[in-house]
Length: 428
Ligand code: AMP
Ligand code: GLY
Image (cartoon, rainbow, N blue to C red; front, side):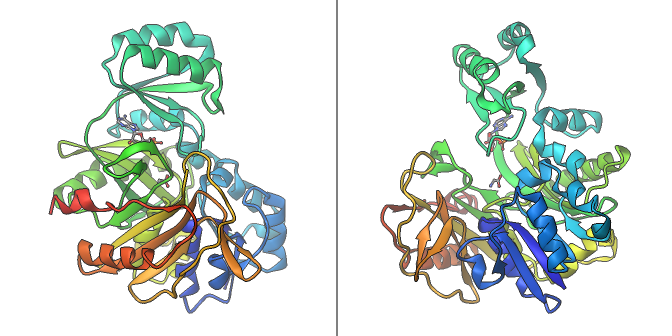
């Protein structure tokens, strides 16, 4: 089978790495990919937003299965666009259509969906610019801290936690009237602050049935002990020790089942991943956000723990046959440590030569995120550059394997967190 992965980050390298291991894999393409994906797939220089270019590639290379990595093309309707072509009606696509992708594309849509289907989430109200005065009045009535969220996509940056009323008023004004996050913040969700421990749960659904993939915890802040500004993710761990048994049962019963049933009730034909960001508040799960794709860097710890053939699993999803499918999950622990360019998430340099990239072994793998080839060198080409995954019989072994590989890799101004997993280890 000929397959296409859309995207260019560590998540897409991981998906391509796993797809390439399948016996069914004939030609695997990735658009546009990075220096690492070139070793498991054929990079094609077409941007994830170039729907026409992607459509032509699919027709030319007789691609039967497409796995869409990032949220932007999904929210922009890549699925609907491809399937509307008369020759592509039978194309198998993992990733929801425009309507389903609203679960991530609009926080207000997601909140209304959860409220309608009785899914536990923080109390909230949505305001537009025209209702600024009303929003200011509303802020006077809420408890601090309070969370302000840009309604639209903001590359993971659109959420601001405000400590007091003054901060909340000024942030609200910047978001609604000064386009702090462009048009994404022309509508703002004001949401109750939830205090607890976060984790991510991943679900694969074919629109009728679902499978729960391994859960993961990611480390968003740039600094050790979770200090400093948020990033796309500095590391991740799977499984998450506090999220077993009872808690996961609550997640399935209160969140996953009503989410899949809600999609059905709304006639949203959803084939793809649902990434549910959760807060564990004293043992009860609340949804913080839905994403309509896998997480990055969570994919780098989730995929290595799935023993199944990923092409089979993706086909079962696209064909509506997930209920017949049995997942086989590796009990091992996986950790990933993200190596970033110094200065990220603010300004940083690109084009630094990366030295010491080792060949992957059975229990450690280097996934590329922001890299590209430059002559004979591989150079940095983004803020998050590499994600180094280790697998072990326990968290310590997994982390040792990640950090051993990390210690061999160098470039000017490289930075990574040295405390990935430490908080979970102290809970063991
Ligand atoms: P999001 O982009 O929705 O994932 O939000 C970014 C981060 O903001 C989350 O990972 C949480 O750490 C935090 N956050 C979002 N919503 C809330 C909330 N209601 N209460 C507390 N923290 C939140
Ligand atoms: N790691 C968070 C995300 O992928 O959105």
